[in-house]
Length: 281
Image (cartoon, rainbow, N blue to C red; front, side, top):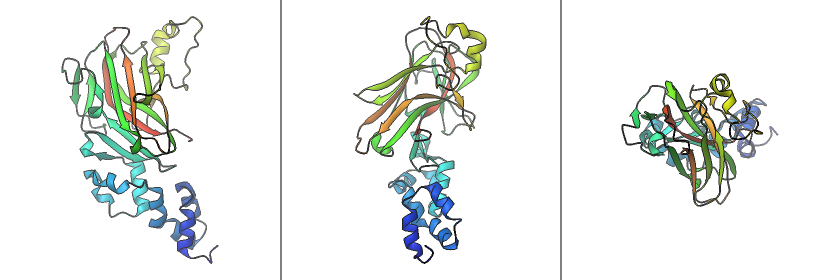
């Protein structure tokens, strides 16, 4: 193999995965040169990466980087599109598939522009310039959309609401919300989840989880009914999955609804809705 030209080895490596390329770089000196070449790592970047970089003012320092440096920077440091008013873009480290987070400002939040019900504020730990904080509502309706052409084709995605609860939040301790993911004007995957952390439910309202059905089982910690804490210390709750077909062309809509009970709710801080490849897929 080492008798082959570096370009030939690089071409072969480009048909593998980013993880494989990193492993192959330790085989020999010529494999290292080939595996770290721009030709290999550009093949792992999405075809429209240049367009995405040009739409972000935060990416100017990346344009002189090697393609490998660019790849890993996009994995670890999402770039803001349109100055963070709409979305952030990043790559899944394992696969190189596209990941997006739709900012709170680009979501449809019912009563979101009414200061009595929602406020817009800046916090240092947020990815975007502004987040939405729920003052008090009894009608919770949050929707987000993204064109399927923006996503990587042939990929199973999962959508997540990324949020926090303030110390004085209430109304989410035992009241579930209905979440859904699906194409606009098409079928949606719908389920019920809880935005309050599980320990609060267990300690204060464990008897209410099964009120809707005497035979319903209590949700488990890892079945997606409760939020998980992210590395960035925000919470995320799974909204559902969507397989983006090779030729898919439409709008993917995600929603978070609590319209039925009429109870007042407050203290929900929305950063956005994230869409990323499903773990292990």
